[in-house]
Length: 155
Length: 136
Image (cartoon, rainbow over all chains, first blue to last red; front, side):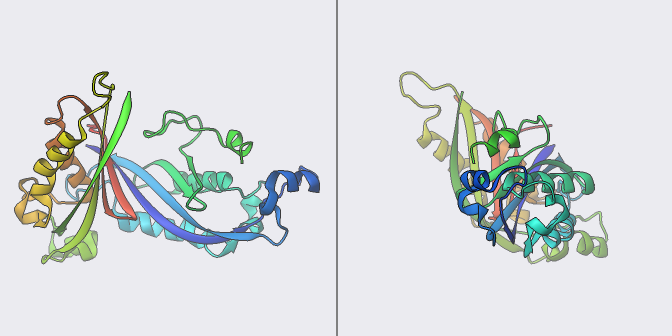
C-alpha cells in the first residue's frame, strides 16, 4: 500500500530581497523591510514529503536514516547558517522563500533515489509557508497550487 | 464537498524487528528502534473525513459519533499499549508509523457510515508524520 511520509528539518539562514532588474525605489516599494541592504535572517523549517509503497519487510516507505542523511548532506549543509544571496543559485534569482522552496525541491527530486518526492513545504516564519510539488502539479491536500510567479506578486 | 479533521492523542511503545532478517541486519536497518525492550512515543492522530453537508444538521459528520468511533476502534486498542505485543495487526507486522496509519485506516473505514474517510495522518513526533489515503 502507498503511504506518504513527511519529515521536518530546521535551518537558519540570512537573505536580502533585491532584484537587479528593478530600480532601488522599486525594490524598496516591493520588498520593504526585506530590502535592507545588510540582510536579515530566519529559522526555516523544511517539510519534505515522499511517497511510495510500504515495504513488506521493513514496514517503511523509505528508511529515515537515508532521508535524514540525504537532507543533512545536500540541503542543511548547503543552507544552514549561510547568507543565501552569496550562493550561486541566487546569483540571478532573488532568494525569496518561493525560490528557495523550488531549489530544495529540485535538489531532492534530482538526488534522492529511495522514494518519490511529493512536495516540499518551507516555513519562513510561523505565519508564512510555501509549497512546491513540481511544475503544474496538484497536491493531495490542496486542489490548486499557485505558481511561484503568481505568489510573488502578492508578497 | 467539505473536509473535517478530528485530532486525538495516544501514547504507546513499540520496536522494529523482522524475524526474517539476521540480528545484524535488524540492527543495521532499524538502528535504535530495534531495541527489543521497546521505546515509546506520544502519537497524534488526525482523521479527516469528507462529505456533503447534511441540510438538516449542517454537519458533514456528527463529531460526537466520530470521536466515539476513534476512541472505540483506535484509542482503546492502542493507547498505553505495547503495540508489538498487544495490538493484533502488529503481532506479525512491524508497527512503523506507516503501518500504524494503515491499520487505523482499516479500523475506521468500515465504521464511518455517513462520511467518507479521506486521510489518516499519524504523527510519531512533531517532526515525523505519515499520511495514508487508502491507496493500494
